[in-house]
Image (cartoon, rainbow, N blue to C red; front, top):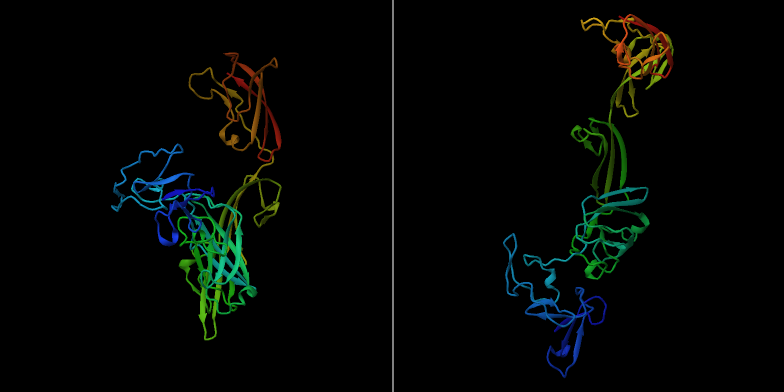
Length: 434
């Protein structure tokens, strides 16, 4: 027999001499082509079976040397021993180095990250699917919802228009209205089949082939007509108790939303109550702010009249805020009142001529540097020549001009500076170099 794509449909067929109904055999040179009823692997125009392995025959009709001895046993890392396959579905190129078959395909798997809810006659499903294979599940692909059993009555088939790359997951959502479920009053499960258009999953007669279709299914119990959702709010670290739910503090230690459900059985039907528990956190914030004198403070829910704020003071205050859920929060504020004008004090003389290391430079002390936002200083000699200039609040001048120090001279300085609120000021004075 020859395995070949003889009709150019992209898939292999088996070509043999003989008669199908009476077994294989030589019957006057008849050729029988068998294909189309099984998911044969893709094939080139000419293939052949050689030495019990399917190997690729070159286009010039030469047979390449086998990549390994056809009788070689394979042992994988787990110790399993395999021998070569004699199987038309198995190509030598789909064996790994341990003799294990593999195919580069997509492989959709549903996960347990699923949620159900029922409210106002609407049944909502949310679930996750992942592609754990090595090829992209190409859009469009389909999802079919069956009643109770796979290939049972079809509730709906939906088309997914976003491809799913290898290693990625996506969350699918859908809703059913009560009137869609009413024709099936005894429904026990909704079966979700991914990569299925209502005729079967993947290689079982459905859509794109994949490695494993047994994990394409997810089962949901339908929410009965008596299903209800309750929304409740509590604070972090509080228990929640009502006639249906008993939630202790170990489950409410962090803020967020959690879902709980309970099923109640009666003789007539089952009822489900879903609790959507919203857990809110209390908080404690600390702020330090500086304001100019003569202004009131009004921020973070705290108001202080300007008559209570005096220049140079630091006022620490706080406020407790209570949310509608009873979670008390505290805001602490430290208010520093800055004078509208900041007086600067600088030395009126420096003594670089002495060798005592004291009072050798003209500078602004760190205390005043921290009170102002910026600074620009000009120093002139008696002939109005600029001898020093800086915009550094930490400036230092030793009395030098052009590399020399002229002692017993008086110099005039002008400083322009601003406070933290951008208000500009000017200070003038003299300094004597001794």
